Image (cartoon, rainbow, N blue to C red; front, side, top):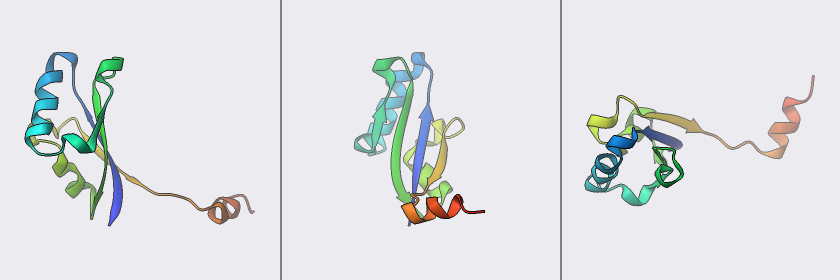
Length: 85
């Protein structure tokens, strides 16, 4: 499985609704939130077979503004190889 960063933004007026919906879906412990810092967004790193599958942690009524980004880690050797001509 791959790892994905799921980004689920919302506006301040929808803050409580967004957080309650994530909790109702059973994924509240997966998310970190920026709301108390003025950034009305939730972030979660999930393992999934695809970006579409990763998006299932976001309630369906919030998916239109959410996105999933595949994450990769580079080894030191891979970074060195990038610098070779």
